[in-house]
Image 1 (tube, rainbow, N blue to C red):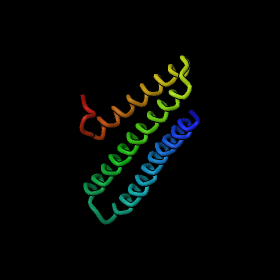
Image 2: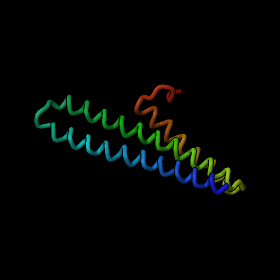
Image 3: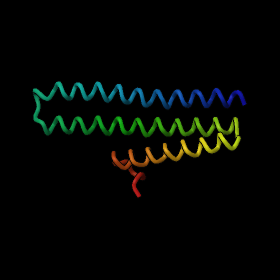
Image 4: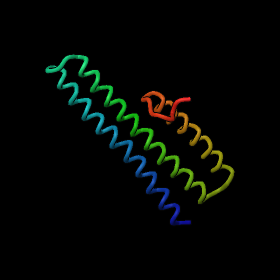
Amino acid sequence: MIVLEYISSVIAIIGAAIIIWGVIKGLVALLLAEFRIFRKSRGETEEAEEKVRLGIGFNLILGLEFLIAADIIRTIVEPNLEELGILAAIVAIRIALAYFLGREIGLPGRKL
């Protein structure tokens, strides 16, 4: 069971790293797009900003999926009613976030 705790922690760290990496990458791309506004038309800059938004959204969804997996594994290690209730609430919130983010960025399979 200690191995599952470590696995859960590693998966949670990976999920957080994906989210952090996506935000950093998006911020750098956004800054570059804003600096290019002086050389390009506004339409091209808006297209670049849309790509940044989609990239950040994709990384958020992927990171949330990893965090959900880590929570499920963590609950397997300590299965009591309180932990199950907390897990259900966390998973429901994260699934709702992933659904609406997926719908916003237009991922296939994320629309009802």
